[in-house]
Length: 141
Image (cartoon, rainbow, N blue to C red; front, side, top):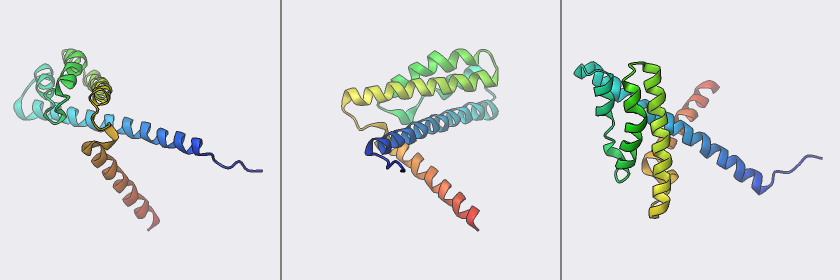
């Protein structure tokens, strides 16, 4: 006798998807910051500390910008002093993860819409699904 999936099982699978989507979004945001740092180094001739400091402004994260800057200064800025690219990227990812956690808590405290309803997050998910659909279609040809 095969077991029929219960509604609870479906909700757990849905939560697992959102966990994966959140991790992918963190990686996406981290890579954006990483590209900004590298671009500042290449185009403006900045060293690691100056480029990392300059990349930590987060104009797109208003009204949570101060949370993001605090986490950036806590994680990414100290790692920049090492000059080790891997350490800097790991610190950027840690800063983004912590800042996103802070932002989600602040959203809940303010009564703002949750992250999964944020236009930037939704656009990321839509683009990712579109890319997956194109890849699936291409593999069928």
